[in-house]
Image 1 (cartoon, one colour):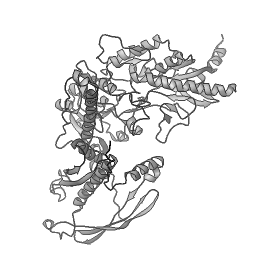
Image 2 (cartoon, each protein chain N blue to C red; image 1 turned 180 degrees about the vertical axis):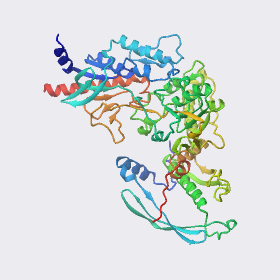
Image 3 (cartoon, rainbow over the protein chains, first blue to last red; image 1 turned 90 degrees about the vertical axis):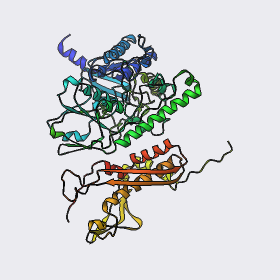
Image 4 (cartoon, helix red, strand yellow; image 1 turned 30 degrees about the horizontal axis):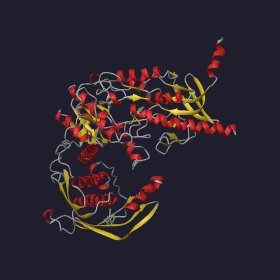
Length: 429
Length: 186
């Protein structure tokens, strides 16, 4: 074939019923469900399968969920350590293995550059040609871009800013003090390992979710699952907007199954400050609300544990497990740190563990709200034939976890199939 | 069950508040308020402030009546003590805000209050305002609020009321986070 012909072939849009964007757990779970319904589809992946797990996480990270919980449609962990937590290479192995197992039609190294409405469906442009499709499933993840507050712009040039997306291990940081901003799982894990490397840590703490790793002899995820919290649906919670904003719980996956909370970090010498709320003339300012956010988190945790105790009593599970435990309230220093002069040389690095947001820069559709969030009802986007997966509390509390992909994929695949039926009936009629 | 449903009344119209929240979620521009005060110097350190008009829900409003506040300093400052000190007004603002929050949240959560008392203490080293020691700040070193609450609720529920009222309080936020303040001469 001559060169011009192959070029024109490459520019000829291929046609498929469904384009799935992203070959992580969500996209692959959807692929499996589409295959079960014999809906022809392609899974477009900008890098390799499980790309974010491969390239955008720090070295020591392990899943926050135990191995027994790690499952995808038709596949679950079968190894020797059900109570362990997968390392990133293990997660990549699990998800890549799954892609092979279900023979997912994945096109790797294919970056979607644009998705826009075209006719009764969509036109998907990539760096390797175009696709025309009737339906699109956005499974490109919720954690693409570090959401760093604007005040970062005021950080003096002598201080290096890093985000959890680029952070790998403490050895890559300058010697000297580190300010970690954010007290979710990410902030606490990174603060802990940097502190252990001999770099003194100040941790800026806003609203957070505290949980023990193990409660009454079981992983907290066991209890959350058992009492039905993980299956709680998006149309059942009081305040969905708030539920979707809840930061990841302060958990870490270690062989010792140890609890990582603010008290544990205080015991190791980490200094706690309030939420970072300003940066003026090189001075970082911290909110005086540290006591309040700690108390809110303690109260919420105690309500969670009381709910677990109640469920255990009602079901008889209480007879099989150790007695209820009371956790020590979070200790806050008498006069917490309110400001820190970043020009003084004490702080050399700031880690912005302030969360992530999805990247929809390629999604050219009129379906965003005034804050740039995709408008959807439980993953059914406000546009015919478009669906989204893997966002926090998309359809259930577990939606953004690996084991949460299955139920969402089945239900959204049923929605998608219903849409195709309706469209095709209309044309047939 | 034969017991009649208990009517919770803390004097807060929580239905109106919930409705307002829904309406303003749809129309966020209506949520922009401006609060105002004017202050006239009287004599010495004595001043008289007035609060009357404010802006919100897209239009001007006035309070049902004009409120006035005398501010001064006590005898130990060689003043005439014609009113509370401005710093004490800040404590009044914090206590009023947190207490209103406790009542509203209690209503929303179906908790009957019987009595609520907040005691507020602000510690200040006046070496700051007198310019004696530049390492001492002018404002409060710390503020302690202590609530005594009698309500039909468990101690944990009462703790949660107070914690939530801080989370939703304007004045708590004003005091715990920096605000940009501009002062000009016309």
